[in-house]
Length: 275
Image 1 (cartoon, rainbow, N blue to C red):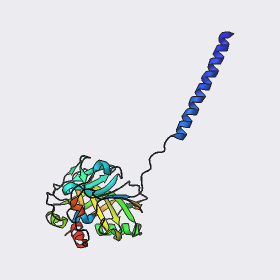
Image 2 (cartoon, helix red, strand yellow; image 1 turned 180 degrees about the horizontal axis):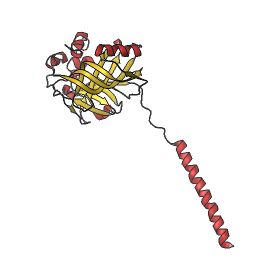
Image 3 (cartoon, rainbow, N blue to C red; image 1 turned 90 degrees about the horizontal axis):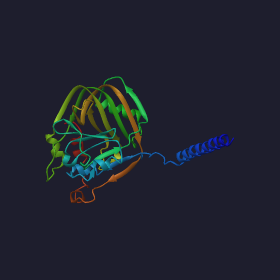
Image 4 (cartoon, helix red, strand yellow; image 1 turned 45 degrees about the vertical axis):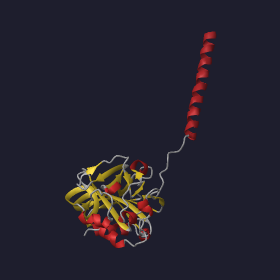
């Protein structure tokens, strides 16, 4: 009798203990910290006019920049290549046209990044020139005073990109650097466009209109996009209504005393577009 009674008591205590563990687990679940929510907006390092003026010293590491986004474009210290940030991975297209994986200790003098969360996806099933593509994005996103981050994975009948050689001090203005920029031509290549469409009011701070970089799927090349013909692809786009951060150099005489009052619109057009 005593053994049977003890077995019943042990079973009862075990049941109580199990219930307590389950309840504790549920309570822990209720009290667990929520998953981090990515900030919705653009973080930018320095300004485009500073870059045009020759302020190429990096002042934010790639590791630090990753805190603010997993998607974006920019350049590296001394203009050492074109930057593509895609899926949280940085790629560098050098002046030799090759793609490299930069060390996260490298710094950038200019970049724009976001956490890419597309709110539109559309198939592109007919050939489009670069101009026709931009018109399509304008049609799908007619809010001209909002930002639009976009990527296109597709096949390209033709792609023309550029990068620039790493510069040494004293740094020349960007418009002078791009006069001798290496240009790369590709045919029948698959890859991804990574870019932003920015409103006109960002003049002087970022690039008004379209700023696009390209990365080949096989990592055979890429760079700043000058022109292309898209055969087919899939467009994903993210409407962005917040400019979260603008990080300016804190200890840079080059930035502090650079002429940022001059209208550099013509310089920017010469730098961004195909000549």
